[in-house]
Amino acid sequence: MYKVKEIFRSIQGEGFNTGKESVFIRFSGCNFWNGRVEDRLEAKCNFCDTDFVGVNGKNGGNYNLKELIEVVERVWDLSFSLKKKKT
Image (cartoon, rainbow, N blue to C red; front, side, top):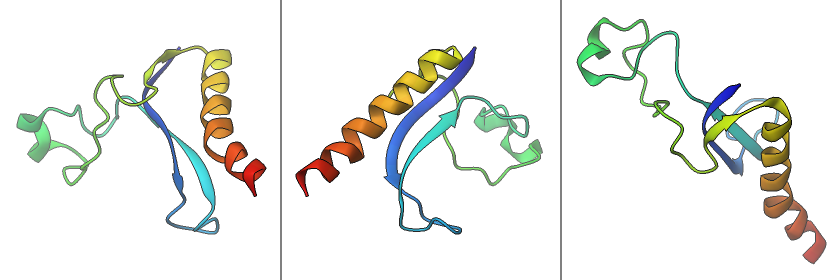
């Protein structure tokens, strides 16, 4: 089971694929910090500003692999395939 905070579309902002349309999966949880503000100073990654706690983000939830693939495909199709069909 995959705990996912959110699945969203955006433009890749770094690396070789900068500027390309992408679908991002932000998984819930982190092994460097538990997300509790009171524990931030002692965390290995105390500079993190990512909200990774819970599964309440856009398209978030608990998914098995098949379900996760289906959601990613749906987000991709709704986001980019429709745009390409119009042009």
